[in-house]
Every structure is written in structure tokens, then in C-alpha cells.
Length: 181
Image (cartoon, rainbow, N blue to C red):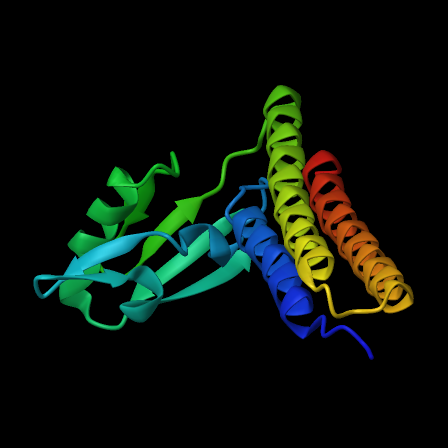
């Protein structure tokens, strides 16, 4: 008898995906359209994600170019960026919005690297919580033979170790991106 770890794999993969989404929002000093993912624009009375009312491109390493699909949304886009917590100043020429990404100081990069480590730790805790739930389920299953229970626990630990290693890799890649700019 083998213990089904499909749910655990999905939940652990979800922790990795959540980490990647969080890290995409951390500004690195390079222009990255993902930093605008959380910006919502009031468009015809409804809050709409920026990427649904404009195209976002990266013409230069530290410039984001936002071209609204509807020119009447330009002011709303500028306002949405100004009230967001990004700390960027949009420049509008009547047709497009330019966002210059400022160069980061060494101190700020180190702060962001700490943030990356904190997010990675949250993801690891999430993976460990999944492991704990599976281990509890294994212990509660009184019908499972001891050998099968031990194999299931070993498989669960192996899966946990793989996911934690993947999370460490994701975090190390983001830290490298932050510190080598």
C-alpha cells in the first residue's frame, strides 16, 4: 500500500508559486512590468488591474512605458500609480506614461535581500505545515502497517526536502538579482 502524496505535492508547489509571486513584487532596480501587478485603476467606475487598461513595455533597462488602450484612462493610470505604495513618479506626455525606476542604494538592496529571506522562510514554514499535516494523517491511520507508515513518512520527508531546496533556489536567484545590479 502506498500513501497518496498528490495533495501534499500540490500544496507544497503552491507555496513555491506564492513565493515567486511575492518576489516578483520586490523591486530590483531594473524595469520589470510585474511591479505593477497590484496597481488597480478606476476605469469607468470599476477598479481594474492596470495591465487590463494599458500595455506595459520595457524600452530601456530602467524605464517602464505604459500605453493606455483608451487615452481617456491616462489620468486615472497616473493617479493609480501615485497612490500605490511603489514610490515611483509617473511622467505623462498626454499619450503614454513613463516610469523611471531609480537606482537603488547598497543599503536598500541589503534590506530587500532580507525581505527575500523573510518571504522564503514563510514559504518554508508553509511547506513544513503541509509535512506536519501529512505526518499527522499517517499516525492517525491505525490500519496502515508500520512498514508502510515508515515508508510514507520517508516519502513525505523527501518531498519536503525537495521543496525546501527549490524554495532556497528561488530565493537565492532573487537575492543574486538584487545584489548584482
